[in-house]
Image (cartoon, rainbow, N blue to C red; front, side, top):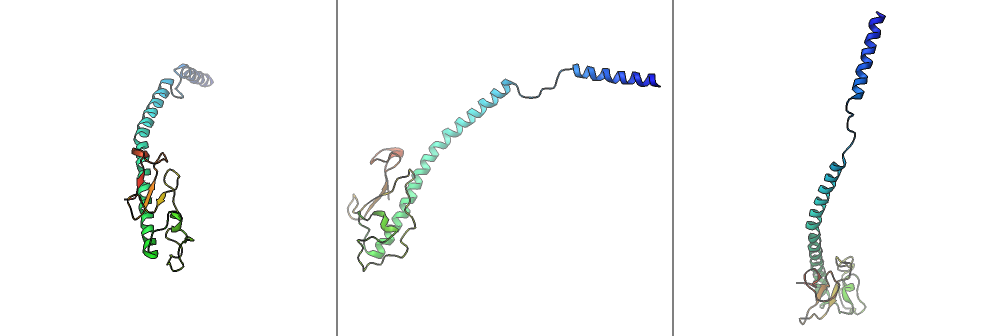
Length: 161
C-alpha cells in the first residue's frame, strides 16, 4: 500500500510540474491595449470640448439677458414708487438702498427692490445710464465678454430690450 501511495504522490507531483511549465496566465494589459484606450478617451474628450464650450458662451449671454430683465423690472418698480428712475450718479445701487438724492417725500420700498446687485457672467458690474441713448428712460447693459463698448458675437454689448 505504501508503494501505491508513493506512486500516487509522484504522479500528482508530475502533474503539478507539467501545469507549471504551461503558458503563464496574463496578469495585465499590453501596451497596445493601453494605447488604444488612451486614444479613444482622447477622441471622446475632443468631441465633448468642441460641443460644450460654445454652449457655455451662449449660456453666459442668456444669463446676462435674464439678469438685465430682472434689474429692469426692479427699476420699473422703483419708478412706480418714486415717480422717476434713479439718477445715473446713484446707479443700480439705488435698488438695494435708498439713495441720498431721493427726496423725503419719496416712497422708497423698505428692504430695497433687490437683495443684492449681481455681476454680469464675466464678473463685471452691469452698466446703467439715465437718460438712455434713445432719449427718456434708461439704458441697462453688460459690456459682454471683452468688457469694452461695442464688439461682435460674444463680445457684443447686451442691452435691455
